[in-house]
Image (cartoon, rainbow, N blue to C red; front, side):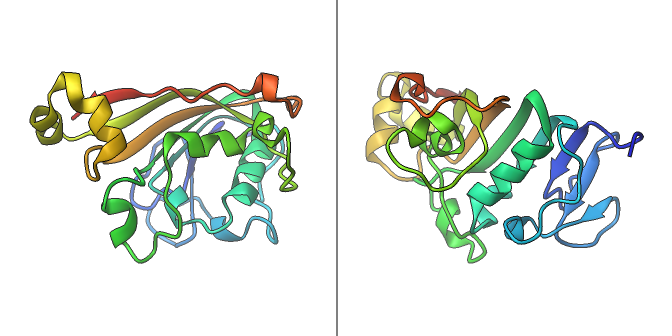
Length: 194
């Protein structure tokens, strides 16, 4: 597997990226490897340990019923300090709920559960460790203009359908960090108007 790309497009669908390994649960043009991302606990990804330096998972995670198993596998196959870019519908937007194939919704703080420090007082048996590097809530321009710059952040906490997506970058921590409240950092987010 020495010629295996070091960039992985997880759940690529029709977003085929040249120079990346494009994997998906369905067959299709440009898909390099068919894998069941929803069953990583029973069927690990058929990819080598410590290989990938960059991963993308765009509008995939909300379809996964066992996200901890998937994130463990992504951690296993990632190099130390590998970058994982994730985009999901924001839990406070109807888009997170209207699609019957969505099984879970996310807010920025949800991503703390993919890092070991969050488990300082309980244990789900999770063995991966990802640290939040950046986080942004994607807000449609019409919503931003309606609330105005000075009230937009407050509106995100009190109203539905203000932010549409969560765009987050995670970093693979290897070796995994200690489960300690002292290592837990808040997830701060930027607002990106599009």
